[in-house]
Every structure is written in C-alpha cells, then in structure tokens.
Length: 218
Image 1 (cartoon, one colour):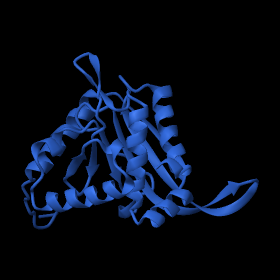
Image 2: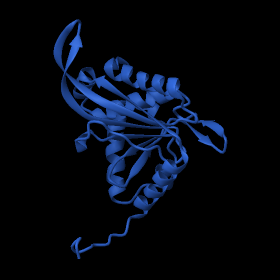
Image 3: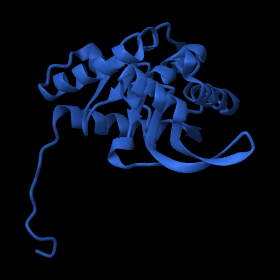
Image 4: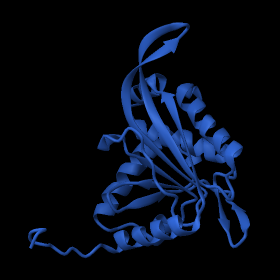
C-alpha cells in the first residue's frame, strides 16, 4: 500500500462530541475573528508574585471582560439573543477535553490555577460531570505551551465567543519613547457575528488587553 500500514483508531466519546460541535459551528455560524498583541511583562510579574500560571492570570482577565461585556457571555439561539448571568468558562485541558469553570469571574488567579489543574486530572480519569462538559457560556484555550504564537479556536455550540492565547515571545517594545526589551503575546477572539458585532467584539478584546497590561485589578 502506498500509504503504508493503516491503523484505525476509534475516537473517544469526547472526541466525537468535539468533532460534531466544531462541524456544526463551522457550517452554521458566521464567524468574526479579531487578534491583538498584548504586552505581558506586568502580567508575568503578577503570575510570579502570586505563584500561578500565566493561563490563570489570562483566564481571570477573560472572565472579568466577559462580565463587563454581556454580549460576549451570550449566545444566538433560535433567532434571539441569550445573555447569561453566570460567567462559566470552558477551558481546554487536553487534546480532546474541555471543562467548565463555573462563575470564573468570582475566582482569584490562585483559585483558577488550582481548579484548572483539578479539572485536568479529573478529565484524565474520565470523572467530569455532564454539567462540567456542557454548561459553558464561553471558551478559553491557552495554546502557548504547544508553541503556537497565533492561536485560533472555534466557539463551541452556540456560544458567542472563544478566546485563545498563544506563546509569549520576547520582542522590542516602545516604552516612554524608547525601545526596550519586552514580552508579547497574541490573543485571538473568534465570535458569532450574529450577536457579537465588530465594535462590541473590539471593545471586548480591548478590555482583556487592558486588564493584562495593567493587572492591578486581577
């Protein structure tokens, strides 16, 4: 055979569900994608000070921005808008898994750091509950550890927004009129254009950028 020996692998239940939801989203949702570069030096310092991951700091910023921008924490469903009172963020925790952190906007970076680790461990043991797999109001993925510097992901189901962050890279930046070494990160928003229009989507992304570049409120 020209392709060599073929090995057939059956997808897991989670992989089948993910494939179905991504295909449905791509087939039915008009997407808008926006990207922004964020200076991460202060966020890195905060993460080191509080002994948490950059993922936890970024997740905290995303959750607060979702609370500030209700149309990002929402969905277009059956011809109307659904705005959710709770900020439940699905976090990508593996090749075929995402788990929901409930009320993420009420949790500190330390709490988010611990909860992501706990959910990842439980996902490996196939212990995630049905609500943890299906109750998210938005999706977040940290693709930086995979070496991806310009990330993109698809919103799951009818969610309005999916946010992905990439690798943090050393770059020259302008500070007080001088060029100095710094650290930059690309953040990408993929959103349902039926509910999260251009100016609103840009405002949401700008709020995340502000929170990460000036993280005193995190």
